[in-house]
Image 1: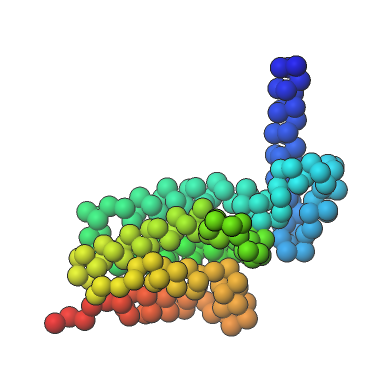
Image 2: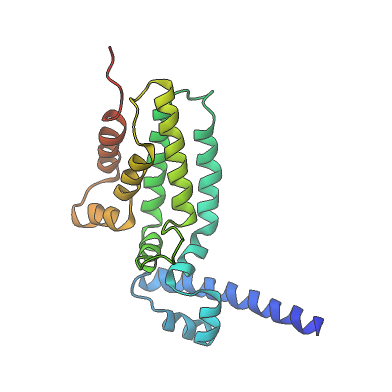
Length: 206
C-alpha cells in the first residue's frame, strides 16, 4: 500500500511537471489566450480529469508558471525597499517598487492577463479577490505610504485606498490597453505613475 502511494505521488509530480513544460511550449508557439485547456491536455497526453486535478483553470496554470519569477521578484525588490538606511526616502523606495512592478508586468503580461481573467468571477464568500502576489504588493505600498507620512514626505492620507488605486492602474487589463491600444511606452507609463502617485502626493515645501 505504501509503495503504491509513493508511486502515485511520483506519477502525479511527473504529470504536473509535464503539463507545465507542455504549457510553456504551447504558450510560446500559439500565445496564452488562444491556447485552451483541452489542447493542453491533448498535447500532454493526459485526460482532462488529470489536468483539472492539478490546475482548476488556466489562471492556476499561469500562476504556477510564474511562481518562481514572482518569488525572485519579491526577494529582490523586497530587499531593495525594506531598508531605509540605503534610501531614506519612502517615496523613492515606492518609486522603485512601482517601476519594478511595471517591468515584471511587461515581461509576463499574457500570464498575468490570463490570471486576471480567471479570477474575474466573484470570490468565494469571506475570501479576498486579491491573489497572494497582489496582496503582498498592496501591503508593501501601504507600508511605504505610511512611512512617507511619518517622515513628513506626504500629508496624512488613506494609504490602503491609494494602494488600491496604484494597483488598479497597474492591472493587466489596464496595462494591456495602455501598451497595445494606446501605444504608450514603458517610460511614459512610469513617468505618468510618478507624476500622479509620487509627485502628486508629495508635501509642498514650505
